[in-house]
Length: 282
Image 1 (cartoon, rainbow, N blue to C red):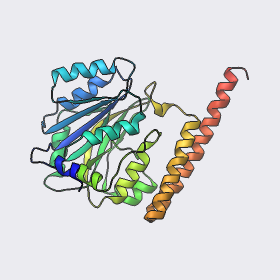
Image 2 (tube, one colour):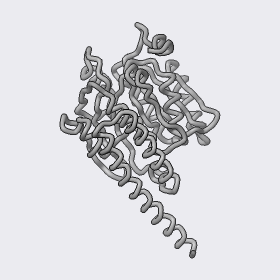
Image 3 (spheres, rainbow, N blue to C red):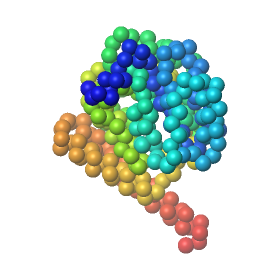
Image 4 (cartoon, one colour):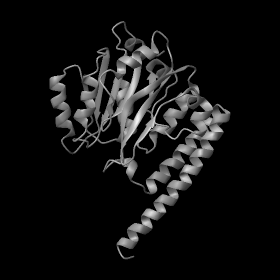
């Protein structure tokens, strides 16, 4: 473990670091922070990173910090997108376990981290798979099971390779130098696949931890363009590098799945371009 990691690993270490990232979500950020502050488990560190928002997001975070002095607030002066923002939060975190929370989402109830703490117990697990509920333009309940938490399933079948539906042991992430690619869409993909494939132990929290908001206006996941294709291709290049460095059967499955996704995004981008041109009478 490096010197920085050693310094973080102290007897006063919190059980969970909840990392909240925010960009132009003034209507949602208070709910996200409140859902953590109100937890019955108080052995929590809250890190909020504002990625140079241009609306009132920063003001609302400042107001929340005045009410709760223990919130660690990082305000970035230059917008560097979600990958860099999450890395900044990770660098500031000192807790035993990491939970990511997008600033427009929220924890499902006030006792959920207390329940998660009991699931982990005294064991040291690399990852805990979390249940979550999707709200917004669609409704879905996703609860992990032993069948959906195998490495093969995660590589081949998992529809949600996102970082926030897992709880990560921070020391495991640091030992394996797992961080997000910066300046790129779909930054979750490499982080999650690398972390899941390198993990040696896991547990299951078979209850809803997060409420995820789908289809929010202005969300980057609702937009499609050529950058989506470029960044998917870059992810494929990085996955191929991983394949050469440390081959597993799962990496081949992952690459095939991402190739299919790249084709789909290309089709979607072409349709969006034609639709836009037709509206303009071209």
